[in-house]
Length: 635
Image (cartoon, rainbow, N blue to C red; front, side):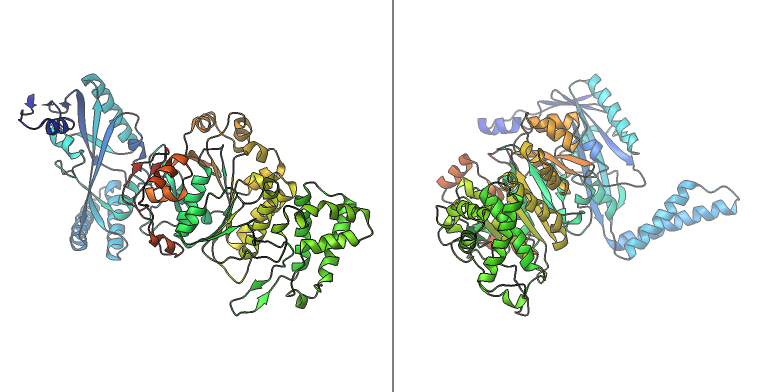
């Protein structure tokens, strides 16, 4: 054995401390292992690979419970050299096959398989569908003692054998093997194997087979958005909702678990893809994000901001003409039943529904709107007109409904309905803020804004992918009529190329109703964040969670959760760049820091995020102050 000591050098105390933080006190070099300080290491080189590989085939090595250093060295081969080498290799293989046939011997299956692979690879390289690379894969095993190192090396070689890889010791080159796996980009072993583009892409450490629709294994850019890091394999969780059977998503978690944070991140990253987004914001949490990307912000409930539920869904066509569905008046009348039910806070009886239906028809006829579509362009009536019609009726049920509508016509909440609609919008991002509404009116405010959004989503003359985000959806779902409207919207959104995102913290209340369960069942993407112990039993039964997943949701940190789609479930950690974190965070401590600093991490270029060809921004990973892992790397 050769024992090498680090030479003592006279230098400043700070320099010596920084050098000692990296350099070991001594390195003992043996034939198959090293002793680096108190650490025992042994290096292995992979000389045999499986014939076929799949995305994430190196994941078992990356998730090995012991300490491993896995180094993948890549050297591209220029097309001319690749074509020459493939030609020579084909000549050797064909010569071997002819020699075997001439001697009357049995064919070697290994040679036959190699010849087929060589022909296939040669044709793909000739057509420009792939390139060749020289790949070196090396592993360094760490342990605390020599016996432990021997056991770890045996376990790692067995794991490699299960993956159809042949791992050999770097005998008499242990020092070179160790330095090869250090983050210096040096390959002192130079034991290479030729890979094509597809095999190299599958060997990329961030690829994963956990969510096949979300894995960016192709050369072209992935179509989904980045959700975070896989907590098991540390691969990227990249998910495309619009490639599934339906485009809906539900985000369930207790207060402070990161629901709105994740919803805003997905919103921001969806804008890069050219997806139009509309948001129902009950707590004014999306304003900073909306203003930074040049969106439209509407304060529902503020002075001079009104939404008239009697407006008929008249769509503007590209040629300047206006059109409406043939049953527009009938559908609007049925929607007004839902509006009045939510306003009154109770289901109406059969007599009251009949009186209300007659009153709605009479109200439209009073302003000249009939079943004739030519009359639908006339100004729509107001809630006050309906109250007056019901009050003038001779029916007792109509008088009672008119009296209960008083707060919304002449009372404290009249400003939302006292006039024609002013909340018009058109753009890549529109946020409806409900903070100015009192708590008693937030349910009807959510319903009216969703109806306004749905008119644009269902416009057949404008076809583009859209996403509708309903934050704190429990405000609407606690009303049976509102829950039914949300359920109908979830069922019909796919036909209009739209995805509904429902985020709520009252998971138990949502799961306790059939309509709540139906909304969740109609979401192909289901995200569970940290849950309260009181609701975990109901959640575990609804989502068929294992004991491990149940415990994970009880102890998950902020931003950690389960992404479920069909039978697949994966634990992930939300990641965001510092710029994204500035736009989406609501942590008071972080907001205070941003307020104290004059320099904002956001620049004026973000107003162009509505363009379909915009890209992600950032530089590298860092740990954020709110417990979120931030990603600055272009995804």
